[in-house]
Amino acid sequence: MTVVNDNNAGVKPTITPLQRIDVEGGDVLHALKSHDKTFQGFGEAYFSLIAEGAIKSWRRHQVATLNLVVPLGKVRFVTTVNGESFEENIVSSQHNFVRLTIPSGLWLAFQGLEKEESLILNISNRVHQSEEIDRRDLSHFDYDW
Image (cartoon, rainbow, N blue to C red; front, side):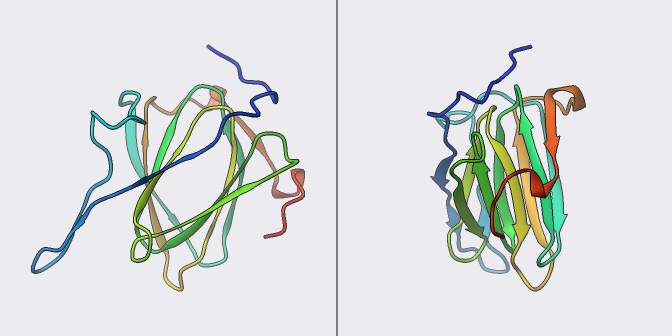
């Protein structure tokens, strides 16, 4: 297993615009294709729900790459390498339908911003393995939510 360190200063999330196809009766929303530059293989896909105002604490994957899509709602994703600077990306199913790719080595926390629950799809290149995830409380980094 490759172990990351806090010297990953060049590691950043990648935003990929996604296609939303207007179809009578309900749109088709693309998520990830095998020929996309950020595709690094398939391990698993799962959905997470997050309530308005709820914040899911800091986590850092040592190996896995996450591909995050918000097909319903609006979510603020915040990443950092070491807690000194932060990158914020707000992803909305209606206003900026994109895929946010989080490479291994970045700390990530996120917050629901929609009145109703928001739905997040994660397409990971690895099957979930708890031992490759570092976790910290929200207070670990000085970020003003």
